Length: 134
Image (cartoon, rainbow, N blue to C red; front, side):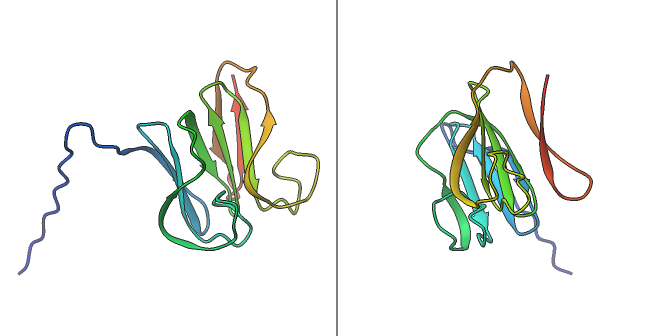
């Protein structure tokens, strides 16, 4: 019998993921330094790196370090910055990005300025995503 124990040692000052989420074929995360990362399928630009090339490991999305939360739909992504501004990208066939079009977006697109004090992307029952602001 072989028993394997994995131990993760975090060194002082290490950058780690504080939040992660996954869609049907892609995943996203925000690290403790506020940077946004994505990996997986990118057919509709849902990773937000400006391309439609799949990524097998996490890639940083942009250079900003003020991301607060991120949520993934089946083929799109929504995120909120620390100023409560809402950003979306990826598949937009049904207008799910909220920009008034049905154009897919390959990188984060500002949808709403930060006016609400507290907003969160959430998963819907059918695998989609939405945003709730309190």
